[in-house]
Amino acid sequence: MTDPLDRSSAAPAAPALPVESEAMVLAREAAAGNGLATGRLLRMLTPRLGSIVRAIMGPAHPDRDDALQVTLIGFVQALPSFRGDCDPAGYAATIAVRTAVAARKRARVRGSREEGTLVEAADPAATPSQQAEARRQQEILRDLLAAIPAEQGETLAMRVVLGWSLEEIAAHTRVPVNTVRSRLRLAKEAMRRRIEADAALLEALEIRS
Image 1: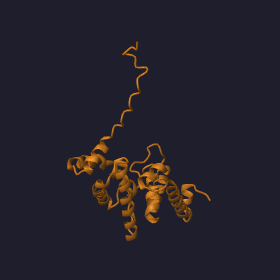
Image 2 (image 1 turned 135 degrees about the horizontal axis):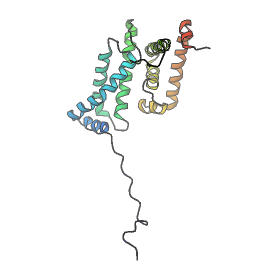
Image 3 (image 1 turned 90 degrees about the vertical axis):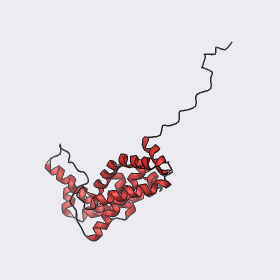
Image 4 (image 1 turned 30 degrees about the horizontal axis):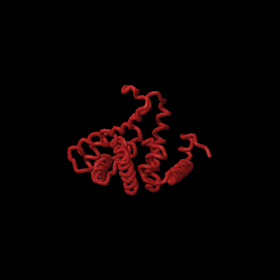
């Protein structure tokens, strides 16, 4: 007689469904028109989006706050088409990158120059010369993002500023990984040409042909 308490022959339990993050729940509700959820989601994501915009544009860029506002508006406007197949924070970060890169390109066309670096705090363990070199590298990258084609600039920013893998960039931009790899290669080649054209930069960054 089978012991009714013996579970050894019982059918395996169904796997637990993944628990959605708070951001995902709020994004779904916001996409359905829930204003309260939209507000909570924006408050949750704004610090991170602000950091991305500052990283790309520089903390002293005169258009930085405007770019953040455009990012938030663009995210809200895009919510109705949000399909829930990716992290809402990543979805919003993609918009922030595109908005900030576009803003820098417009500033470049105007011929304006802004002070600021890609990071707001220097490594306290670094020497003054190392900090100066890091700032110079960041300035080169920030200027490059404004000079190269938008797709390359956005891809480079997602890789360097957001730290995303090639697969993550491909997923958020909805292009093949090989396309991401090609855009990064072209962006890096443009950066190298920019550095090699300036002997002082070449020496400072210790890059040799």
